[in-house]
Amino acid sequence: MFNTEWGRASRSGRSRRVHARTIRTARATVSTIRRMDCTVISIGALAANHLWNERTPARTGHATTALVRTKGAGGSSALILVDPGLPEPALVARLRERTGLGPESITHVFLTTFHPETRRAITAFPDAVWLISPREREWAGVPLAQSLGRLAETQRAAEAAGEELDEDQATMLEVLRRDVAILQRCKPSPDTIAEGVDVFPLPGVTPGCTGLLLSGRETTLICGDAVATAEHVEQGKVLPNCEDREQAKESFVEAIEIADLLVPGRDNLLVNPTKKPF
Image 1 (cartoon, rainbow, N blue to C red):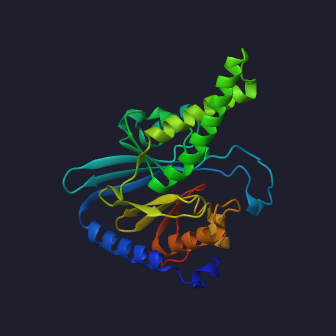
Image 2: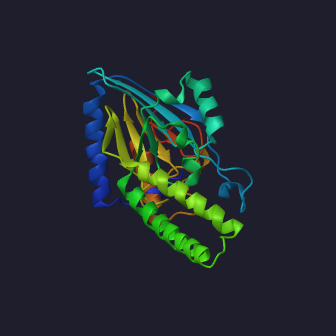
Image 3: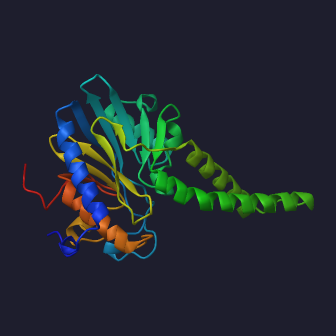
């Protein structure tokens, strides 16, 4: 049964305003959407699940990947892929298996965080618009730029001395350059990506962790790691490695309060156990 301990805690004024505004938007938008569906392309996994008493990685972690398809009353449509966490060949194959679509069909890629496990296959979608929350973009970008600058300076000093970076440094330089290029390509997400698809801030796991709220007959929330698995929902737990644990708890509660259906960051779509059957 869902642990309601955190649900008794009062939310901040900001959270209450966001909650109320989102409910109003969801209700107003339902009548304008001709078609909306969310398909789980790949079910994610935690490298180490603390609820299973795992303290070290037991598997390769990757985020749950979901595809949101919308068709608005005005004829506008969008195919939004969220968190392409598998390696590129596997993700592209899974997309075709689950939907019959190729990478060229995807109009948007949305990252709930900039964690490497959410974006391994992002370069398979060069024609799509890549989106991430402005807060996450800033939070991830500053340390990346600083680390790249320091290592680039080390490289210049080594070259001036007629030397080369060691293998580990050269590998890290390549990784940093790739990550910076990806983040630069990611645009700050607008509040609404498509009709009935609104960004929903869920800070805590990272400062800019952001989900997608899908408005339809039921309200669906793609949660990212703010809500990790069905077991985390049942036990009322957040991940242990949060940047701000208290904020993560507040986001967890807000996610449970607003959504009829949840797409956890590392599990399959599930019916919110606190909601009445529909």
